[in-house]
Image (cartoon, rainbow, N blue to C red; front, side, top):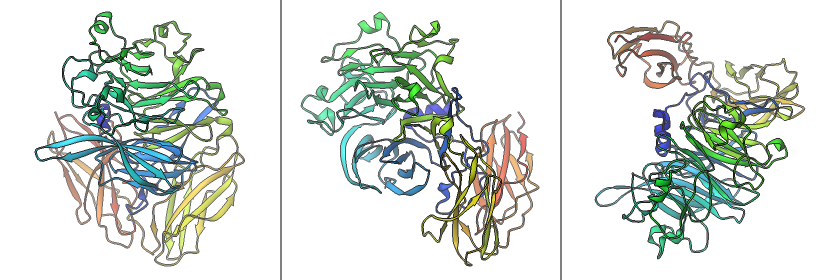
Length: 599
């Protein structure tokens, strides 16, 4: 269920979402800027309720990530708006883009791999002679170890609202995908009399014999549909033990669901969401051999369930035979213990034995992870750990035994250009994980020549390094990670640093505000020291009514004032700024300042 603007937009079709950004990073807005794996100060950690396990962030700085998959020991991640499929190692090192669909798709949704074949789900706008038509397209690619090649279109479904766009791979290598109800269409696959088959509210396979690219164009479209009556789904998976398909579904204002999906399954929409009444079930018109089934679990108050993953892992062995389900509204992961036949769940708490989380129920038994985040995907990795994709923090975590956890990523890595041949690095000591930190690896990328080991320093207390082996004019980027006997932490990266005697501008120290009306606040400041290179622009960030900071605007570097006219009466607003020159972005203004507009 959509409970606020953020979820409304995401659940409509993973569309534009305003999230907390990592604006407080001292990082140039140049190429590689997206490689900063340092979380912003407003970063919301995820917390595992079982203290024997820990969630460790391995990748951040993603741009509205919507889906991930493993190819060997690497991770591919879809980004909603950029159209990019990004490529990382399990250690968090980014490789060149695996795929760029920025000129093809409007939105990039799910992704899945089956051996060396990868499927990508995109929303595409087509223009015919009279109107704009939105379709959901499934692309098939071959993976060559570095990029996705040999594009083939294997499925075209109707677009609109509730696109879903997630996948599952069966034990027989059948690949399933899902499409929601579209633009409120009401036809046979929405359990209505009349209308036409338009490839909405369905689950289909994309790689099986007899596959038709546009299912409704088949001689018998109903033979193409594995399931119908799906309102809005962002979770699809296969039980690796039984081979059975499961999904999650979002209701309109109640009745979020987890379903065991049989062949010829009818989920009941429209109008059923959650458990159907006898009258609702009786009203479903017959369609081919599709049969309605109640959900395996439902929520009275919407949580917007997303991905679901069955745990079968040695490192997470205590949770084997458990289904883990993410939610978007609350940033939770739920854990559901399977019954002996793996066809449903068992509960100890009497409040959950009716298979519904009702308002007021004690949910301790089924709560695995908490956090003020928005979880969109979960996968068990090749190492047996559980990987979690969080669109609000734009990050990927892995959940693993606390005793096996390498050190955390460094949360503050700062660089200073001392001269035309020297850069100094300073960082904070991260959390050690399951063993004491032994030292740090320092890597360097000079003039885009690749990331290479520069030095290793011993001792957890050594948190600085001077690189004096540079040449004037070099462009350099550093990565630093902590090392323990258990393993190596993910990298923290600097931005690209231009090695000159110039530095980034100094912070603005006198930012002042004046609320001149109920809709306008004027900002003014004094030009800070430009670091030896003229200030080219100012970046202005805003936190509105307690929300996280987000980028407001960029203005010319010759200005020392700005009028924000996009406010409403009674808004409580806080601003912060950075000055930018040819070297990069300066630090954030020393003290963010706040004001409230009059009513």
